[in-house]
Every structure is written in C-alpha cells, then in structure tokens.
Image (cartoon, rainbow, N blue to C red):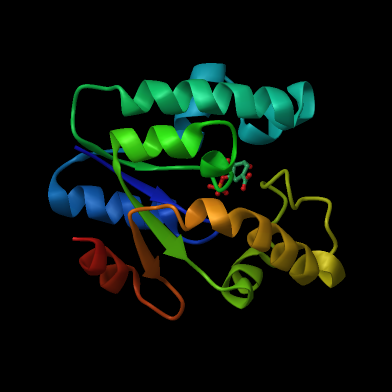
Length: 166
Ligand code: S3P
C-alpha cells in the first residue's frame, strides 16, 4: 500500500511524512526530492530553466513512477501535484491519500520570510501574499478535497498529526 500526503505548500507534508515513515517502518519518498534527483536540478532551477509547464509534465511522469514502485511507502507530494492533468484520479487508484488541511493564516505565517526556495511565491511581496494564498487555495481546494481523508493541521504538533493518520 502507498500512503500519500497532499496539501498546499508549507502544510507539513514532508515533515509529517518523515516521522510517519519512521514510525511505520516504511520507506519515505518526497516527490520534489525525487524529481530533483532524477532531473539533476533543484525545483527552482527546473522552473527557471524550463518553465512550469515542463515541471508539471515531469512531475506527472515521476508521480506515476513512484506510485508504481513495488514496495509499500509513504509519499509526500508537491503542493500542486494533485491539481494537474489526471494526477488526482491516478492517486485515487493507486494510494490512500491524506489532505493536510492548513488555513490561509497558518500557511501565511509559515511562508512569510521563506518564499525564496518556492518558485510560485518567490516573486510575490509580503503585502500581496495573503491575497494570493486565499485565491490559490480556493482554486486548489476542490482537488485537495478529493483525498480519502482530511486532517486539519492548524495548531497541531507533528506527533498529533502523525497519530491521526496512523
Ligand atoms: C509547488 C509546490 C512545491 C513544488 C513546486 C510547486 C506548488 O512543493 O512542488 O515548487 O505548485 O504548490 P511543496 O508543496 O513541497 O513546497
């Protein structure tokens, strides 16, 4: 079985995935790290050199690859992964998925001051960030809501979230 963690940037997918995998004694795969290794470039460089359309294409290909690995594992996705092409349908067929649901305020607090490594928000000034997040989350929520389970993460410790998924 594959357990997939999805949700917006800074919702805690990678941090939760690492702890959960350790507790369940399963392999952990972070899709962004997987893409970086396969492409030999950072996510920021992929966006800069090839653009977002190229990134979404390789993201879908590598998503399929990790979902077809033979072993059980925990996979954390990129924030946009479920929202493009047939990725969400594919995920529904191949995994049990958990949406880590963080509020706009939580995401804003976490992203504020550390947007530089995240190409989608790197050029958005702090004064416009909250409005951008509200709009973007509104667009993405219909995809996230298709996950098998939703876990609210606001004001929760890492351990509490991991226990809820377990
Ligand atoms: C993206 C989120 C990033 C990364 C890429 C695009 C998005 O992953 O995949 O920058 O579209 O929300 P994280 O959610 O791990 O930051």
